[in-house]
Image 1 (tube, rainbow, N blue to C red):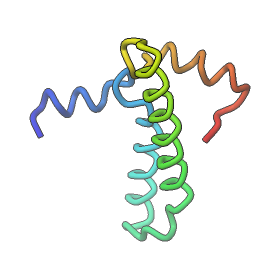
Image 2: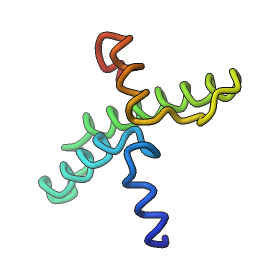
Image 3: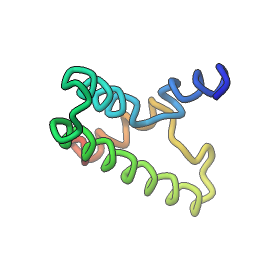
Length: 86
């Protein structure tokens, strides 16, 4: 993976589940890579990806660009739920 690709993946506008991803990796580091101790973090990351993927599909169908909402737009979307839905 090139440096540019890595930087793009660290960009909060491109990666809505960056915090969940980081938390999963941190859990693995802290628990000496014993995956069974990090299940709740993995589930939260997976649910986050599913949620934002559904949003992308919805926006694509509606012709909204960019299909992935920016970090600022995502704040408003989550606020409309009243809680984080994942």
